[in-house]
Image (cartoon, rainbow, N blue to C red; front, side):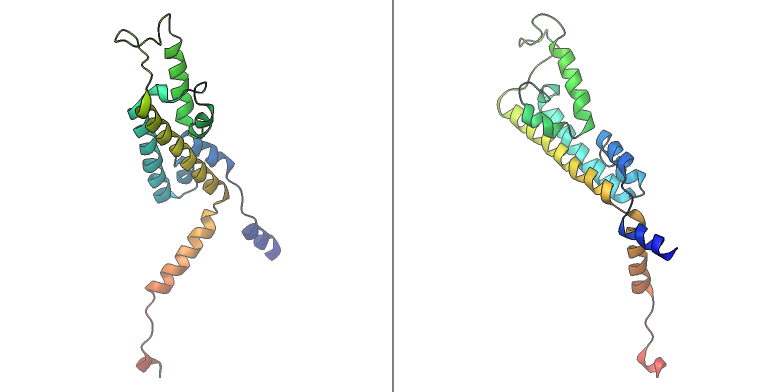
Length: 165
């Protein structure tokens, strides 16, 4: 029975479902495995970067046909797929839908605005990939045991040398 426990420590369980949840919403995978602080930090940081790109360039930032390589990075965040679908719907919403003008619902970004928005959202996707990899391989039980051991060592009072003798 001791060998079985040693094997569990050597080969921690992969967390596939939390990684998929982390793709849908950055940080959610860490929240599901009990890493609340890390999950909230990732949620705020990655989502903030992604929403920043969305606010800079709008849904036109997520254009798979115009920027396929950048879209691969963007698609590592689940919200990018939804934004891409909205962009495709708006682009195909009728004749003249892509012509600039106030009457049209779809206004594509141009120039530096588009480049910045694409960079922000692709970087958010790549950071989310790192977070998903971290969730898959993270063993929260092992991490908690190390932290608990450190806290007990630091919090314990050391005996005075005079009292020991």
